[in-house]
Image (cartoon, rainbow, N blue to C red; front, side, top):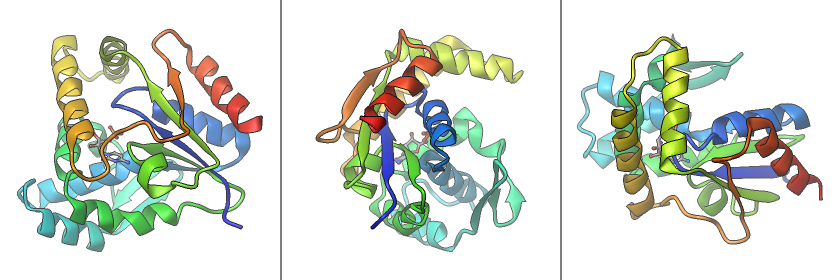
Length: 216
Ligand code: C5P
């Protein structure tokens, strides 16, 4: 009698975070942004000057980090890092530290802890394949690399953060390649997952598609 889970996976900037949190809101479910966990390890390891190649030390750091999500804010060892974990630099570093099994293992229990009544919407790269293989609904959200770069560009500009489309495009391609080719929990379409191509969809259309699949 575990709570139901909607697992939403997809590449960088596919819109899964926005869609997943809106679906969670509509259903009154909890929401897990698993990418934030990898970003926290990335930021923590940067502060502690740990080499992104050092799996064991990164795993140890991930185990002892104090993480909390409160009222939309993200805290790392009691420091508010909500904005600090959102930079492209931290995102790139996250994709480097996320290849280590020691890091991924350290975060499994944290992620399972989000599964509480009445239900959970979880987004990431391996929600349906590794963390919640028994998810009630599995969705793979995708969009062309150009559509994703343009979305990310708009978001950054709207926040007043300078960004160049060409740089974002190559960053996304680099992260996609690393996320899809790593040995442990690579980004992949889970068996039985519904694939949603969102390049031509509005956020609302994507949310409705997921809700429609969940309710039938
Ligand atoms: O989704 P987001 O861009 O915040 O994720 C940052 C990085 O964390 C990804 O590029 C990926 O390498 C890693 N990640 C992961 N598994 C997840 C979520 C994120 O490996 N479930």
